[in-house]
Amino acid sequence: MTDPASSPASASITRTVTADDTARAVGSGDLEVLGTPVLLAWCEAATCQALNLDPGQTSVGTRVEVAHLAASPVGTEVMSTAVIEHLDDRRARFEVSAIDAAGTVLARGVVERAIVDRERFLSHL
Image (cartoon, rainbow, N blue to C red; front, side, top):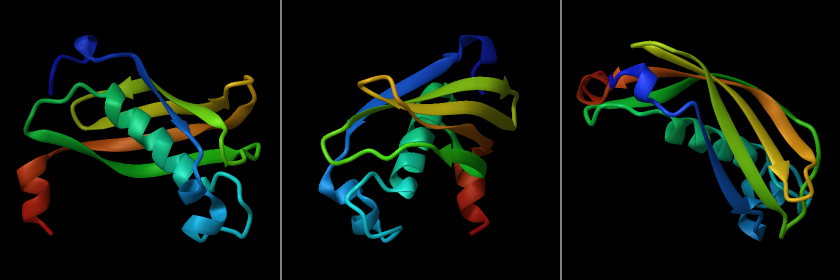
């Protein structure tokens, strides 16, 4: 792994909720609001962006604890942020959050990822 000191401390991604992102569309409910699985995927995407791994490495999700606190209708701009709390050669732990353009906290929680050798990991499947 690249020197942890050179890894960014955080990363954010911004997405706009579309009809394809709703609970109805992803099967996690029947409302036209941002689905929890999509919100989680956006938070995980921020965790991946925050890591500065060597080319032969990747990370895989191992634990998620996220509270989805507020609904977001189609058209809402959402910024998901991941802040590295712990990083070593094998594990990364992030504090994640999501807010909308008005500053409403939509989600807050923790995501953990294992850092693995890409080829070795795939060879065990």
